[in-house]
Image (cartoon, rainbow, N blue to C red; front, side, top):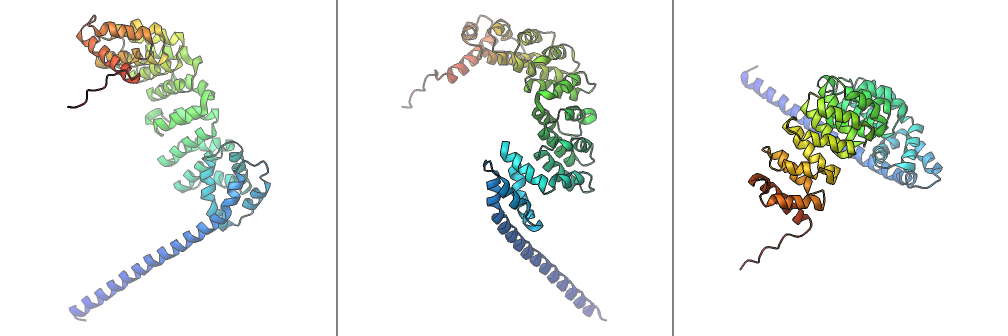
Length: 364
């Protein structure tokens, strides 16, 4: 065979391969579109029963029976809509959907899928069990916090928050130890969803050896309104070796707002503390909203660190007439030019909030 013949045969084979590949792609798209249209039609047929099930009627037996009796193909078409609704409804509607999922064996299958080899299946199973608030899944979901796949770990952490089991608080906190297997914010959200029931684990975590664990505990205790943890947070604010942990403790004390918080935050604005802690404490005093903080905040207005003085001035805008009077006095220069600038800015913010700023003169 000559070189020309060899080239011709090669080109012909290449053309044939390209044609076959194109045919496979086109056929695949056609099949996929037909399947999508079929699934949409099947889902539309079942959707009225799904809406009836979650509509709030006391009698759900009939729509539940119809949906539970759907064949596999029809259920596969309607399941995405049912799963989406499961994450959006609450109360009786949520309970009705959970009952449907239980009758169809979704929870049983999902529990089994938590140990499958495929990461996508493990994550999907954890997602569904979280939406169902399936308490029996907690031990298996806790094990997934150590999964080799980061997406699976993240979904498991979110699911534990959705279930709201107090026993999950400790394992969630440990996720942040040693570098953090799950993102900080995701763990915080799950702990917040668990709520006050997580307090014992959070209190213990304030003494953890890892600063990331102490930091999230200090932050979440304020977000869940754990007034009983004030003494522990005051100790953290005073002695913790991590500046980040101390700033988060200051922020939480501002949210909790007890008299002990006021005293601790006032002390934390002193020069013995790091700049970041002083600035956060100055801002947190405004969160408390106590007029007793006015003298300490006024004294911070000439501070050389901008954030400390600025946060003090902004906090004074939130403490009523005594604070406004202090700002007006400082704006006249009694504490120096630097303090006067911060005071004038704060007064402008007050005037803007109250609609007292003069209107600009019209252009001529």
